[in-house]
Amino acid sequence: MDIFEVLAAITTRKNSFINSGVNEIQALMKAERDVSNEYHISLLDIRRLVGEKTPKKEIRRFRS
Image (cartoon, rainbow, N blue to C red; front, side, top):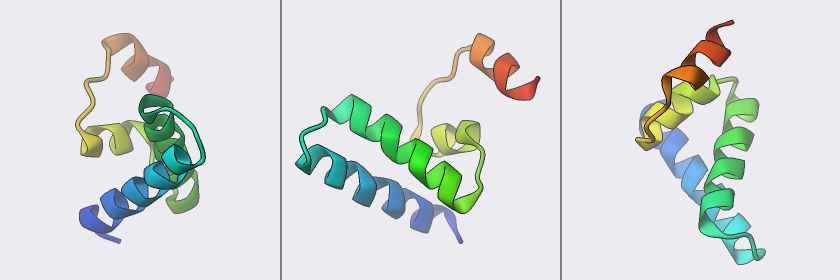
């Protein structure tokens, strides 16, 4: 699975959450979490692909 397929899966899930009535920010977070669990990719890597800035506290939490 390459980067574009992962981003396409996130976008598809995000749009389905938005259509069900969830706001855009929460929809993106849920889509990231779902794709992370389904494809066994760390959530930190998913967030880097999407382009979110991750605070250093959160990076420490993922590593420990």
